[in-house]
Image (spheres, rainbow, N blue to C red):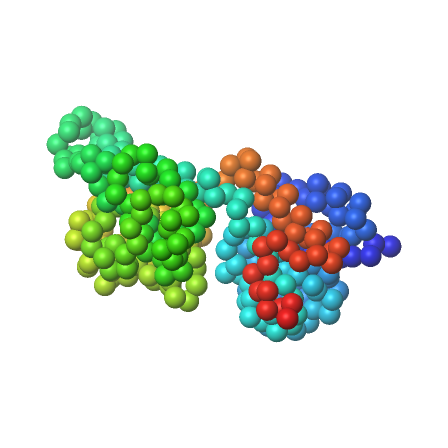
Length: 327
């Protein structure tokens, strides 16, 4: 009989045969589900040693209070919106994520989206399909080297985006209260730290790389759009809750910004084809796919499983998010 039990609350992979096999070799049974309710999670995870979680949530007090053996919750991904970390800590449960499996992909899509908007490729595509072959509807368009690019959030992905943008010669500014001047020096780029209001006022493009926490909820709202004097393009490949969607639609309607690329939208999916965002020529939408590549998918599963094995062998997860639980 296996010594350990690992429960998967939900997953998006074709199968979990690889994980099941490796866990079996390590004296662990894997229970796989697609849970739709807290009661379902409780029923299968009450005696679990580790929980693997993808999108199901919230994993909160109702669930954690019923878990008798759980040592850790490991998130298949970066964000932990689905997990009440404070509640997990109170119940002595470690929480870990996989923070670096798709950094290259997200920064690639962010920069690609920025370039597409600045070069007005979506507009060209739509107008040419309508039979309009002209430069007129693209004017004005400025040299990217002469632009100021503002990055909100200078963590792993923000730094990668900055390095990729630097090759164009643009001025790069950023806003991140958690990054010090010494941190900026370690990044090794000529970056200027400013507050969010100044970033909004002087940027020609704004890239969002901030986490979804209470302090960043609707970080980009009607008041911030009012401060965007240069009518920048806006790219969000981070979290949907960073942008007030109603304020965004209004900003697009009033030409306060020149365009937006969204890989994430608040309260989506599902996406209604009648959504106002789908009606603008200067909007790029993608289905929360910025993280995806075949390589990233492999890394995600591998790194999450490694964290599970650490926990089962009594080690601390590499990406432990609540170290206070060990005190």
